[in-house]
Length: 168
Image (cartoon, one colour):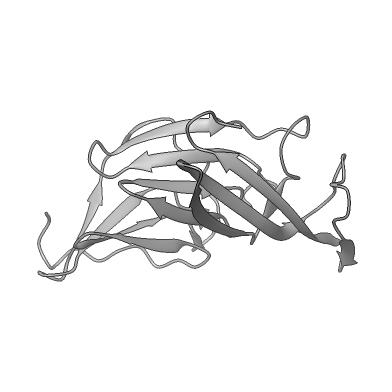
């Protein structure tokens, strides 16, 4: 872990996830830049570090949703050069990213940011539950969901489930 002298980049629109004795902070926006670095805070020592990662990370953006299941952090959507609906996981033991679903209008939830993301466990399976969000359009609307124009953006209350074991 780095010394206490390292300071994380100033940003907003990121999230921080706690696993064990560490806080994992990724993404966000500040000083005209979309950040795509993983910064880690060690709670017992108060030390920050910027850590290198491998694999396929999500694009640097802000307003994405994140949740942890065991040693994996899941990141959905966000806004950078446009709205996203990609899904990525980050393993805190290996510091490796995996793209689970690329951003596309052809499948999954609409491209959006500021969604709610929760984990659920039932019938012996782990799921991600994605709720609502803010996007620019939806090419295929979910039955019984509501969509509202809000200052040129589309707010929705869609609900999507993603089974971790099968990717569906």
